[in-house]
Image 1 (cartoon, rainbow, N blue to C red):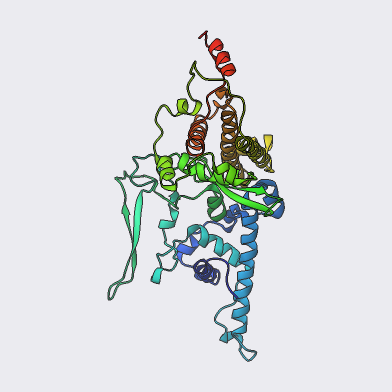
Image 2 (image 1 turned 135 degrees about the vertical axis):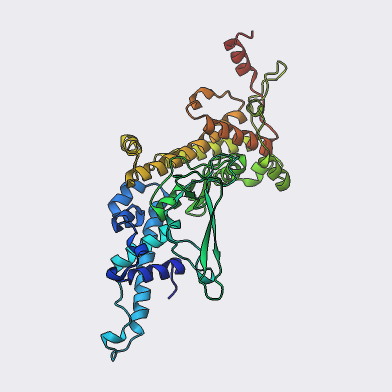
Length: 422
């Protein structure tokens, strides 16, 4: 039978699980107590998983991982048992096959402490001391190490010497510095599932969030559901996911595509451009005295606005679909520890924020297509969210509609009066 989990991780886990505790090396004895691995969601009870992870894609993922690990264990055990016949005596068996509990503990140690590719022939390896480094991502565009304090590589052995791992400082370090590594640009869902922790601020130097929301859209007229990955960040991160989600609610794609020129090369260049200081003004157009009142929308734009409204409702449904909500969520956030409750709260707060960004974008685009005024005061609580939402809205209008229609004369007159411009 085929194995589901990483074969390298499984091999290391079985090796560790078969080591006699009395003969364990100092390195193995330095591992934290096995109870520390209970921070991994696959080891939580079903009730705890449901109460803390309901609404996240991690709920399904951690349960699938638990089932897959159990299947892999049984597959290897069956193969091991079948390799001996009835005439074998206990002394013929090289080692007693470990219990599942012991193997589960060893696999948790490997998945959270192992290094890919540092073993012989590119296999996984456990590296003493190096596995003590905590994870950190760079938060500044001026950080050359992207959060890392050291870099390392495997050095092949020569005649008479074994292979080794060479570790070199990536920057000048003072005595007593706590060293950090980077586990990669991983979202909190990945960090929690594999390592048992989450980051309160999981951002890259370009202001993109590493957390990816798997937004499920029910489509009764086609597939039962479609999953769209949504990620907060500049327009190059948000535009593609937003359009893919919106198109799930459009009944006539041909009509909607008439609204703009989606030349791929030009669009990619536009999305990669840095926003200038006038991006907000571009989004809302200008107040021209000569604008004519035009409240009628063509059928295509009306259908698009309907789809945008449905998308907004679906995003809000997703935001309210987490089991950890309200005071319970606030209390879990306030704990400031590595408990399952606090980690789940960090994950859910980040996902809800991302969903809110896309929801505000859908609402704003719909209003702008109608030439309506948007009160930006309601968004002042999160300036980065507002900035990235505005960037997405501007990109959508430029790519799909060659800009937004001007505000109606009635709205302009109201604004002029409010600002004393009569």
